[in-house]
Each structure stands twice: as structure tokens, then as C-alpha cells.
Length: 236
Length: 286
Image 1: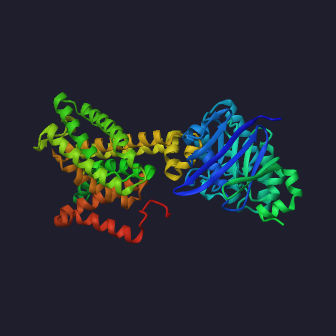
Image 2: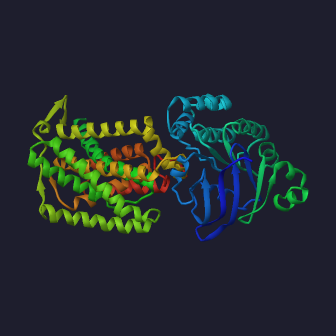
Image 3: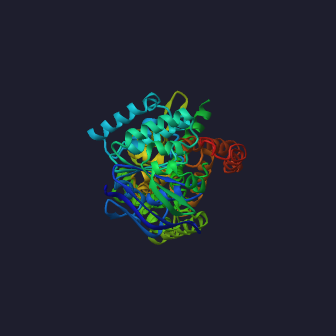
């Protein structure tokens, strides 16, 4: 059995006065892709933001590599080795692609340069539009930049929020392929509405509904469980 | 033609002084969304401590250095004690920074006395020279050159260095910057300190320009800086330079041709910009 890199235990969180997360518990095994599934508004994005410290944990614990990170500031959490690709991508629109990457790079050593070269080979468009402002990129290119920015540092875990959102099917295939390549080197926690994409990449899944983890299992099993898919994901 | 050139040079010098004050203000607002009405207080403290050390040591350069150090220290104190507790609340920011502005202003009178202090430029910057028919006053030229130098050095840092990129990225998306492992609070503090140092430098440079310093000049001058920030676009460094030059030149011409309207023209400029381009001349919509 693989060891858990990240473990959430009965996490609760508020956004302003609204109680969004009621009871979130799950584990992310090292070296795998774990997928959080659920309908819109179930609390998946809030879960990722809470792990990153962008929302405060009001109850429960978040443990990363054996250390409690639930009360740390966001930059400290990131520096523990967690990369974040937010739902809205978080591209710095007035900075060029190269500048976006430079802001993200914690070091400029040989290792980081190699990762940069690898990721640019994976997304040649980024190399092509290196001097173009981030805001002028297409939706797919922005997503590639957001993923590349999170990947360029040697992170132990990547949190990726809905990478297929708003993208054309051909671009979704490209993003899927790139995440598949990344999972060979990094553990990934993926939030995804596109079940087809999630099922191609993920191994283990958790379903979140109304701020609670209500189901978990192996992705292969979920594909066969039509009742569960209809009940929580609206897929028939 | 020589009159117009002279007025333009006067306007440029005034514009550069306003720019130095507004540059800090626009960065602080752009990055931290903080409305700092105490900025004028940093301006007068820079002027007084700078002039005090200039007159004590006889060295204008020492005066400038002391003013900058005063700005940095006051910036640190202001950010930690005054601004930090009210992040995200504009009403509280306005009230507390206006209050602190008055405290800084009155404290000047306690430390340096209530009377005006006369200041002259250092010997090497006194006098003027002609190029053709145009008269160049050395001290004004010095302010213009120093202002441009500050602008270009700041732009180099903002555009070419990683810390500059982080500041610009922070203006656009603070959460994302934090998510990339950067301590945005530390960046906030540094930017605030640099902004305060620029305000203090502006105060020190303004002293020999106007020939006299007094405690109330901070509030008067900071109104011009706020006008410039609104015209240029909040958060835009280049916008502040452009608007400061515009305001400086408009004021110089009006002061010569219609003196009674020299302050009103700036208000008019701001009103026109707010009507037709509320986000400011240099800031992208939204």
C-alpha cells in the first residue's frame, strides 16, 4: 500500500459567513492521481483553496508529508512543495509568458532549467509565444501556462482545478496528455467535471457533495457504477 | 517661444516633484489597495528631517540620504502599526490614515517648531544659465533629471528584475502570487517603504524649490498627488509620470496666464478624466 502524501481529516471551512465545507476527509497517495468529483457548487474548488491556505480551516486537520499545514500561510504551504493551478488559471495578464514563468521559478538552478525545458517541450506554444502577454493567449494556452508554472518547481504535489473548463475538445486531449506525462513525476490532486478526462487520468476518486466527502473508490469501479454516477455526478 | 520653454521647464520640475509623491501612492494603491492619506505626512517628514540635516551638515546629499532613510523608517512603522490592521477596509483606511496625517503634521510642529523654515538650494545648484533664449534654472533642471532617473530606475526594477515582476504580478493577482510561494506581505511592506521613501525624497527636493517649508504643505501637495494618481490610473507608474507632467505644466501655464485658476485647472483635468475615462488614462478597463 502506498503512503499518503496529503491527508484531510474532517475539514470544515467558511467563505465569509457561509459554511461551505462541512466534513471533508480524504487521502492522496504518493505517486498517484487522485480525483475529486462532484456537481457544481459541491465544494471541490473550496477544498483545493483550503488546502492552499486561501480559505481558513475552521475545524479538522490537513496533513502534508506528516506535517500539519492547516494553519499555515499560503506562501509557506506552497514552499512545502505544493503547486496550485486554480480554476481561473491565475495568469498575470500584463506579464509575458516568460515573465509569468520567471515569477513562478523559486530557483534558477540546473534542475529548474531542466524542468523548464521539459515543460516547454510538452507545451511548444509557450515557447512560441514566450514574449506575448499572458492576457493575449487563448484559453488553452493559458491553461498550459498555468500548469507549466506550477510544474516548473520541484513540487511534491500539484493541485489542479478543472483544467478542461471552457476548452475545445482537441485542447482538452492535449491537456489530458500532458497531465498523464506529469503524473509519472509528481503526485496530482485533480478536480474535474469532465468525467471522461478524469477517468483517463485518475486512479482513485472521492465524490464531494454539499461540502462532504460522500463516496470514494477506484476510478475503474466508478465507470461501472451507473447509479452512483447519476446520483452524484448527474451522468446517466 | 522662450517664455513657453521657461513655463514648460517650470511645469516639468513641479511635475517631477508631484510624480515622486504620486509614484509611491499609486504603487501602494495598486498593489495593496490601500488609500493612504498619510502620504503627505511622509512628504513633510522627509522635508523637515532632510532640511534639518542639510543645514546641520552643510551637505545637500546628506540631507537627501536622511530624508530617504526617514521615509523608509516611517514607511515601516506606518505599514506595520497603521495600515496592517485595516487591510481590505477602505473606510477605516481613510479615517485612520487621515488621522495619522494630522498626527504627523502636528508632530512636526512639536519637534521642529511651528514656524516656517527657509531653505536655499546648495551652492552647486544655485543660479541659472541660458541656452539660446531659454533660461534654465539649475535646481529645476536637477529635479527634472532626478525625477526621470527615479522613473527609469523604477521601471527597470519593475520590468527587468524578479522582485519587480513579483510586484507587478501582485498588483494583478495577489492570491496567485502567494500560491507560487511568495510572501506577499513582505512584498507589501517593502513597496510601502519604497513608496514612503519616494514621498520623503519629494519633500526634501521640494524644500529648496519652494524656498520654505511648513507643516501644512504635506496635505496641500498630497492633494495634487491624488489628482495625478486618479488621472494616470491607480496602480500605473507610467500613468503617474504622464499625469504629473500634465498637471505640472497645466499649473505652470495657468499660474502665469490666469493665476486665480491655477489650482482649479487640475480639478478640471481630473473631472474630465473621471467623466470620459474613469479608470484613468493609463489603466486598462476593468
